[in-house]
Image (cartoon, rainbow, N blue to C red):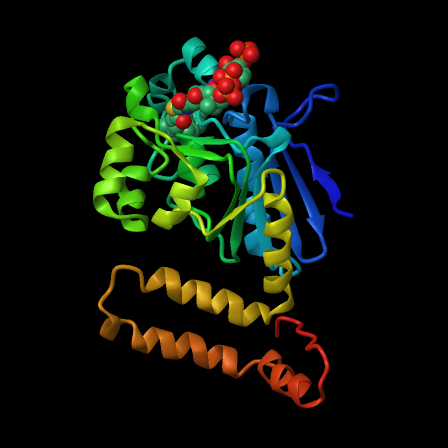
Length: 273
Ligand SMILES: C[C@H](/C=C/C(=O)SCCNC(=O)CCNC(=O)[C@H](O)C(C)(C)COP(=O)(O)OP(=O)(O)OC[C@H]1O[C@@H](n2cnc3c(N)ncnc32)[C@H](O)[C@@H]1OP(=O)(O)O)[C@H]1CC[C@H]2[C@@H]3CCC4=CC(=O)CC[C@]4(C)[C@H]3CC[C@]12C
């Protein structure tokens, strides 16, 4: 059973806007404002920032899952709060919008992040999705980058990221029309990797997370690092770093334990050294 630990920034009575739980080597982050379809709040983003720091700094955590409460992923910016206080006012207060750490813009985890999506993942919801590595969704899940519909800009990074993750013409259509797409179409485009029956996305995410957590953590993190750092480069520019990162993994204790476990016909026990 996961242990619930984080309710940073919330009063004793109010439910925290995001819940952080550790389950063995997995950290599970649940956006938790179901009455607003898990729309983003400053409190939610603060809790998520702390969770991301924890994932990167705690060697016990090998993989992270991001999901939403109540059968919803995230409906993006809180439009009700934005009506009370326009976002532009925050930008005027010295806020640096080039790094939106909570939304994984300008900041990435060093461990794999799996999104488990049910229901709407709209605007900010699809923006944060693009900062995740593996994506699973219930068949009725809905995706879209709706900002232009409200004359807002996809400040979560989609104008840069989406055309790199799905075909250009589809990215342009989604960004410029704000239309939504259902999970099967999102899978066909490669925006998500799995469509599962409604209500089972988290279960599938755990299944994948368990597979990752059982692997050598140094190997997993090194692979992720090379995938990230080689993005957009000619492959010949990548081999030197690829070899350096790979050699460090080969030199580890875990790289001895893996083949030894194979020979001894047992499960390997990796310690991250
Ligand atoms: C730019 C970055 C992102 C921007 C955006 O995300 S724009 C928001 C776009 N969102 C949408 O268009 C979704 C709107 N909702 C819907 O379409 C539907 O509700 C739904 C499809 C999600 C669900 O449909 P449904 O039929 O199931 O349910 P409903 O009946 O419609 O809804 C139920 C209930 O939920 C309420 N609800 C739904 N969505 C929202 C919502 N988005 N906000 C509030 N409430 C919602 C609905 O009203 C119903 O309630 P009821 O009472 O029953 O009527 C931004 C991303 C992060 C921002 C930065 C964060 C940090 C910052 C802090 C600041 O203080 C401001 C500046 C900033 C830096 C900020 C800047 C902008 C971002 C980067």
